[in-house]
Length: 540
Image (tube, rainbow, N blue to C red; front, side, top):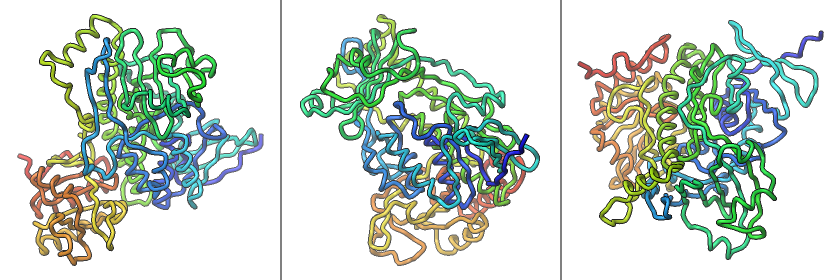
């Protein structure tokens, strides 16, 4: 038997969906060599994600694609939950600006177009080798790295060697299955029909709901979503055995949509029956092989967090793989990936499932009781709940126990070179120490060396009132007071943020900040270190 031809890279990624291709791009921006493979010849052809959040757009911003992608993205409209009799029982909306991360907190998007832009961009990056129509037929690892045997378009076997392998190969992940990794069942399995359609008739478009609607009807729960432009989505609960999982022919779809549209009023773009799951892998790492995205967890769609959860995986992994690959951190740093992400995924998925159970209540008496409880007896309009309150902070891993630790650091608009720009566009990626004007020059100088030890950046942010009065080249002025208000709410003047924008620590003491920075530096260089083992200089 002829030995397969061998090539080398740093990271092998199996699966070129949104998580895999985003991870490839984030690694390539760090000059890491990536080989990414997908078994399909092109983009996945069936309905997938319809919503995402501001963290996804912040990641797209890091890839330099936010402007190009904006034509495929729109703000998520307000949501109405309608009860068994059609009455409004719950209302969700995004909080008003200024937006915490600079982007609308919730967005709808055209995933194929969005994903295509990212794929085209990343595939052209000089350290990325991307191959479609490629099957990974075997893989393994040894003390020196990992290997994957693959066939391209039925051609001869090839072997690719790398330092690490990340499986982004979907909910049925062959990599996860071959590793024998079990999954914890979070107790949600629902069969739904998903239909994307282009509504070309203006009169039909005007007749459809202007908001997103959750029809919480026990006879047939359903969801209506206004997507970008004329695209609309319907998600319709199925009874057991009504439709097999997989594509649904166009001629079979219209009967399910007759409540809203008739043949000739829209063009069916994609339709498929799905089984929505709530599952999470019990191990996200086995040696040099890691899981990300749906390979590690599956989330029902009711909070539009499925893809967003995977994108957080990619961003968490990217900076840690960089630190390990360049030798500045030990391999043990990658253990913090599961420590941080798995609890966050579980809590977010449990919130999603709770929302899904409310929507999917099929018992009429229970649905009536739900409606009465949510609406109340005083006849007042149902209040609006902001969607963003559902997302938890990190609670474990590389964070200290200080106010705001584990949260996402805000991204304000700032004045720079006569323009107003988002902060990340000014500072780039990496560790960041942000201070308020309350920190004087002497204390700022004390923070300089421990920040540089982390290869980080030190930045002073001034409130809007200082616009026009700041001449320091190491300082910026924010437009809306977002960062200033956030720091004040925490009683802090200094924030230490990680490359994925999660807050490591906040403090108002420069001495404590130096101690925290040194502790973080040591933890990143010590095998099996846990930044929470001695959580804060103030710990009793």
